[in-house]
Image 1: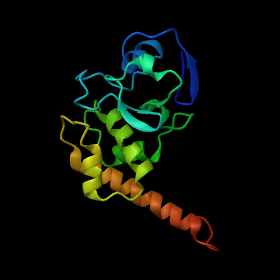
Image 2: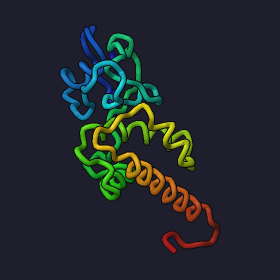
Image 3: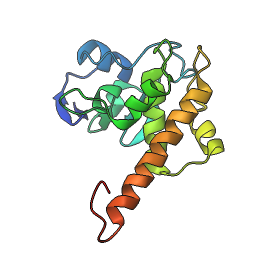
Image 4: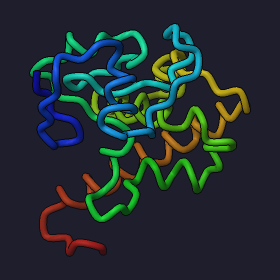
Length: 166
């Protein structure tokens, strides 16, 4: 079968097990974490054809032809962080960091669907991702900051006759 992971086409022998097994064991993409193995914690959240999915509950064989984005696919090819990843650092939303990949993927999906989410919308969108360190308020602030910065950048880009960066 074949699937596209982080914009790279992969051909794999008919896989056994879950998408999480395929990502971690066969493709060496270990950013996606195995924690509960029951779809309850969200640490294994990836984007499957543009929507969040728990990799621990998704059969790998069902992903033939799919497009998958893992946390490794969020940053730039040169390894630099994207704005959401940087905000998680800036707002100390990562704490121990174990849930962070899943949190980032859920936040990325939220902002792709809703560029200006309210706090209740953020809380609802992130509710499938657990954090044992309890950094929920910091995660919400990081997402709010990215949403605001992106709106500001879009408004500046759309303003006619205003020099970029003014």
